[in-house]
Length: 434
Image (cartoon, rainbow, N blue to C red; front, side, top):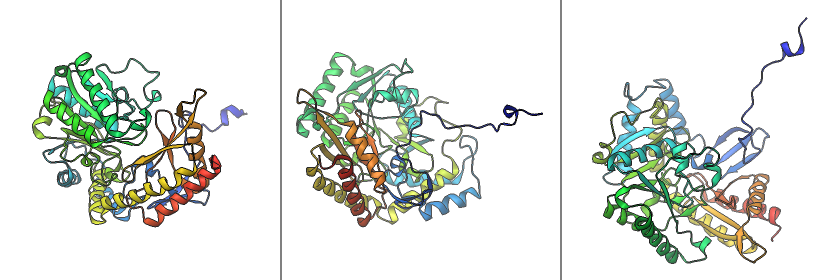
């Protein structure tokens, strides 16, 4: 006779630490829309955290991936080379900043970030990396050590990687200043750090996002990027720009840092939107710099996967053929203008900001002393209410008090209009006009 324990079917569950931002279970998706297993259609302004750049299941990207699957799925690129990676490298060469002509491929943004700092340290022989307050660079140990967008990314598994130092970011709204004042302050504090704690000749790299992602959807002022470029050149420091979230057309230019005219990084990091949902990342640098990496320091089993590379090749072609960089600029202006029209009805909206198809709405309240403080409860309530209105959004920011909107680059004028309508309705539900 068998017992219940002997006949029980083994089961497994996702980690309880993995929390969904929405209750939606996707059945299928196309363009800017997700159809849930509940039968409802949701306008997706999350895009997998900025990943599905050409929208969900763009027919051309799907066809490219399907065709590649029938040829070869995995051809490990330090063992045998495959055509999609060669073609991707050639196509990237057309859109990369001038002089960044050597590319290394990995799987994720974190891996690419770590490859960039490894290269900077090897090239300079220096130990220190300077990051900027609110930056997000990944969750692996080294990448998390570089991340200051919230303690949840780096707490509980110390010691972290040594040699990381943080300088202020010109977060004008937080300081209550105009942008120029915030930039002047942040550059002064960086100079002070370089004279008081981190000697320039011990500093391998500056690492910054052109738009802070998890740190609150804050565009980096062009004059601040120019100031970093000037200091990096003067001191022989490698200037690394993390374009994982802001790159590939999202800001209305192909790369987010290109809003700072004339500023060219020494290393650029890309991932997320590179392949419309397939996992691939890369760093690019001048050949002279890339050649300073030590033998064996670059590689990886799945890096530059053939199917992901084929999808990335077609993603670039779609972005070019459909004018999606310009679409991101125009639709982004429409989205920000609409949000700024809505915001005055809701006093708990402290700031509306963004660039291209990256918009952040920061919620604040006042404490007992009358000081302005983050209102994470309002942001979470609004984000949850948007799902009820058929609009998918996310929160971000160290205080969790920013709702971010990340439409696909293919988003239409009507979809932005509908998204704004649904966002305003969610504000009414969550905040009641307060």
